[in-house]
Image (tube, rainbow, N blue to C red; front, side):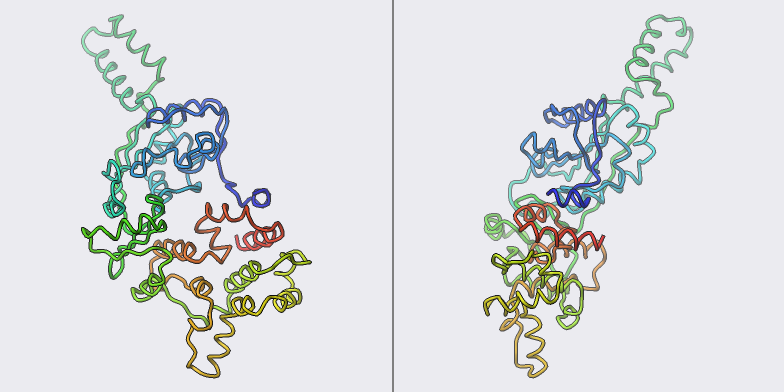
Length: 411
């Protein structure tokens, strides 16, 4: 990961936490039903997730009480606008943006000396069957303040009102109550601590539950796509829902997405794009066996690239150049079919979200396409960082340099 870190491409926007903030973070962990961290310093993202604590607990999703009950923690206004590096759902960052948009002033006030625990409640206590994900419709975002600060404010205001009544201003017991409240929580009279629950509507989305599931329900027919084969087999037994169910590697999935006007392709247009060049070069790198030159140089230098292309065995060379071979043959005769010439995974990688889709749907479909055929390193990095990071670690050092260069030049 060092190359990504040096290029500021690896979790570069995390916020450092130390001192009093660690204490507040731990109180939130305990309130949410988790054990506190023993770390004295760590980093957090926009939703309050920490890679160091995840490593300490050996649980990437340590802020979840089961797959149906995710949580968040806000301990500083600096979390506003920060990335959510390991979202459990594709809408997690949107929820955090809405929280800060609605309650930005309250968050600034509360986090001066407290913290906010967030409960993302979809009214599902636990998942039992894979198609339970279809129950997602509205997320009720509930807020709980550390030390029940909002309730302490109400109690303090009640004591003040009692103090003002009759001759209570000379009552030493009421004096003591006020002093104890002020010492414990400060002067809460003018604090802006009220955070009513927010309802967040959900349509199409991706969740990490059940090994990863895409729910597409804003199109011709609802479609559910499973990344995990075991859960896919379990889901197709369920006849309670009128939905189309696929495994992410089923051949029929891409055809169905095209038929439902969710994705599209145009090979003649694609071959003229930078994206095609990235895909083709990454594909080429997968066939290089002990090259005498650094892979980065081979992919950057047209002369070296052609030289090594011609050194590939004929089948590998056909796969790398299959799109251009198909288009050349098509100029001679229209009898040729894509499936006969173009490598299937390369063909899948050249699809894109249909131009008619809204922006929020385009991002979700890009993520799906990247997971189906991860060949464009830039979009892989953009739409599934965690999977990109996991694969990046195993690549040739020189290939890593090329990938870092490609991403850096496009940010």
